[in-house]
Length: 448
Image (cartoon, rainbow, N blue to C red; front, side):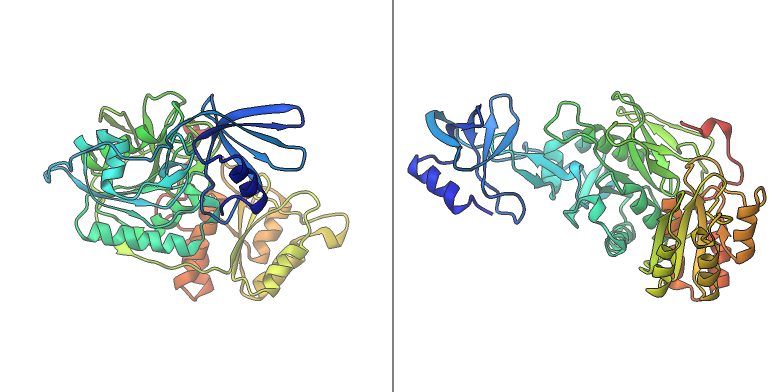
């Protein structure tokens, strides 16, 4: 939305327009910089005066009666983003489709206006990361969504799966999906189940640093993802992100074994109870690990299914079982309970009303599938060591080995989306389909 009427009145009175240098005084603090326009969006406070400070950062000062605004000498012509001129690479390079789902990596900055816009054409992508021009041919680049990853739902997963399947069916060597990092491991798991046996890599790529920062990681992540498609024969869905804090190499992590483990580090994504499939250097060097399985066979299959009545609940000391009862009352068909340790849920509590066992028994009687994972992240669940887990197992709860909670949630929703038989869903939930359940947990995968 534009500036509010009162801010607009003050600016008009001063004959101040975007690009003019102004000074704003508020509560004894003085701000000087170039006036920025407000973007035509529905969020933000239209009473805030936006300035580009001399240090390059933007600031918003909320206007009120005690705020003094002055127009100063000087102005700048506000910049408009223009991609660098590039040529489309020759056709002999492997062709890819690049899909944009939103997030930090899909943004580019107008340095004067501070406005954020989304990359959506091959020319724009190549203009920002021209190195791709020598690695792959971007046959198609499409902005599918412009969403923060926490705003994604199963509907968007299905849409991305459709786009991915179509691109690979049309002959692309691989697909790169630019995605926000916060829930990228949910999407990678969903695409793993929905697009099975892809003929080439399906690579989700994110960025922990915005594109206006010198420490941005987006360029190298995209470069390494492109090398992976151009030079490897991997037929996997996975995540390609920095392998360490520097710009040395990236890791390609199997989509059902990845997890975001840090809020802001560039190497935030790690494999859980698994090794990465390979390391990729920005010069194109690829080193595979023992987890890489060459010559994967089988035709690509498309399973765009998901049951929305699935939930993921975290249990904790004193957690109320009424939450589970509420979901059952609302018609939920599957619920993942994230327990403690080996998969323990409050069961033999001093107060009977604090025990989750009756709620679990009721849910299972009503044909709701209850799956149990662990909050420990590493290691595996085991229902045979302690009494409480044995009681849950006897009630009919399903223990899923070392599958992560996020992947279990996605897999359960995917299974219930196309299988009506509850016993078959339970069987497949405990069956390793795509590497989501480890037969053996290697000691060298801990805190990798």
